[in-house]
Length: 206
Image 1 (cartoon, rainbow, N blue to C red):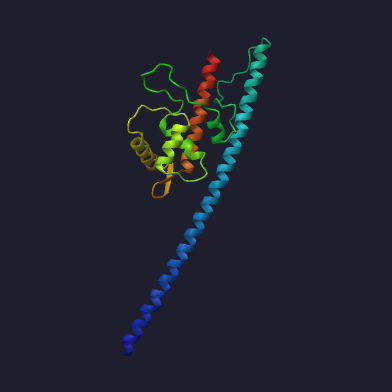
Image 2: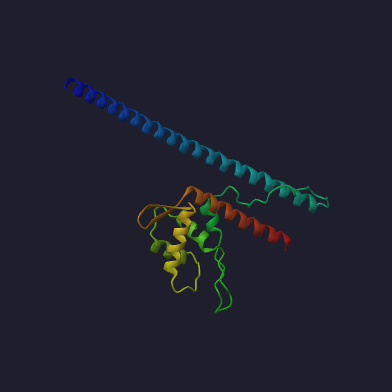
């Protein structure tokens, strides 16, 4: 009996040690996760600030170059500089507000939209203060001016939301509730900036 009691006590002590070690590991992991999140937030803020400075500097250089050319000078060599939108430091919501859906002038043809459906859904989620259901997303997409000739647009919305979730561009914290993710916000900002830069380049070419 004494031997069995000793074994039981040893097992109990070992079990207690494992529980303690497990709890310590969970605490350490939680702390590390919080540290990573804080570092990511700090890095994102620094990157955003740097992008604003970059856009400001590049646009100032282009303005100076235009002035030089207007005075008859050859101008500066800006080929190595990336094209930045004039509102390079703006938020995604501001960029969205400045972009309107283009309506197709001819009837009976496929609608032409300023943004594809992926980007339109992401803009809707980015400007929403709460998570949205697929039906709410659909209503907001249509209200934004997006045009479709599809007879099953609800299905397309659901499929697109699912694909965006797989791509980690939207998050789904609960059943039928969607919001834009950090990756989705970065992707949207990058795509909008690229579209605006292309428009600026096209305008300069014209």
